[in-house]
Length: 321
Length: 300
Image (cartoon, rainbow over all chains, first blue to last red):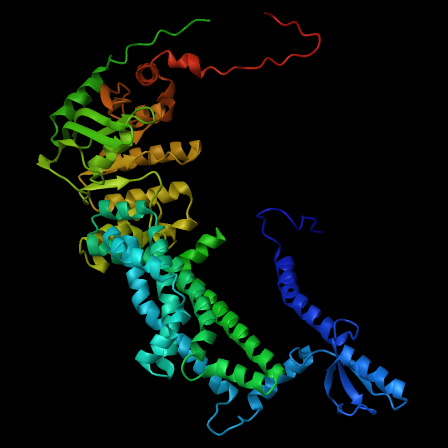
């Protein structure tokens, strides 16, 4: 019998409760969505025409506003002609959960409309490579600069004021410039991810580096460590687990720049797929594609979290204690 | 009640006197000459340390004691090279030294073990920094880990150890460099009373077994008297050496001696030096509200 309260400040929940709440957090939005989709008197602002009756412009399966349907019905009724029949429906942009679930499979198997276009899996893969290169390039430059900024005051002074200014410039603002310099294909897209990630990255990494306990550096000094040893044997290993956590968060941010990045130059990747499907009014596919981004993001983060526990064994022991 | 008449802390038995004569014959490891330290603050310049002069002989155990704010931590940080003196000199084996180095091992109150390294790798850190090969460093490290009795934990990470064990690793790590002197900055301040007294006995054992000179900072009178040959008593504002006390308690030391007349006499003397009766004590008195119940007689 666990009678511990559900709401106690900063007290961890039992594993069972944690699991239940995790499931509920996904179930709740799904439940609301299902209710709006399947309970006919909830919302449903449209009517789908089953039999047009004598309304001249109604056609089978046509979606009309409820008011329009009512007005036309009363007009036909007054004229003594056949009434149209229909049932309440949601707008086309809100597909029901089962339609989206089906779209998860069908969107992969639907052939592209034109030869030159990509299958969904190709689009997704293209998006992932854009994120990958943007993030890797940013990290290759941003992490070392961040670590140096956090370690040496002089390096920090020469970088951080400008970066602090630059990070307020919205990355998409550089879209046109990036296209002019890097062409219309993947170059400018990677550049936008880079700009969106890099400046935050330097500041976050330098901040993490500064949080390293200075007494560890002092201890190393009294043990005879020299300048470079301080950096490579104390600072870097000391911040590694936090650095890894930072990069996980930053990777999440990089995903948020993806859509804008992919609209620049020739639209590509998952964004191209989404806009294309929206144009064909396949909103079930649109929803499925948006959810796939979420699932990929969440899965990659879970994998990285597990990897972190594996590569930083001392963190694991600290958590146990 | 009868008060036991304490002997003077200056009275030394022949045995103790002989020991001090012998210590004074030994070479001087550390010498501090005319050391001053000023800090500039918003309120102006503060003299943290004033005219500090002392010598530490080989294999001597010296404690520095003083109330908080007397500059004892500043002193040890200067000796370790983590801070620099404003004026004055510090000689190690007769040679002036500045900046931190492996010749002066330091043990901090906060353990400062590297959490990403195992106990063994922590102890190897100094040796590796000085370019010793991995295999040699490992061999040496294991000997020091044995010495502090942690051979079962050589592959553990610091966060898996108790506070006392962590501090033993820190001592082993500092000693592995074979420093000329071991500087200890309130190393047991964060430990509970029981662990603390156990650690004190450990330290005396280690000190007895190897050729090491120790300078130990503390604010605990019993700790200082129990461990030290000589005690430097510092006075605050500015930090100055008030008196250097030769502890008249014979060695080997034992917790039983805490109640011996020499021990108590020394304790009384240091207590007087650190907590002199002053006007400030009047201000320290709390305004106690008298709790009374109905029917209690309240004296005016």
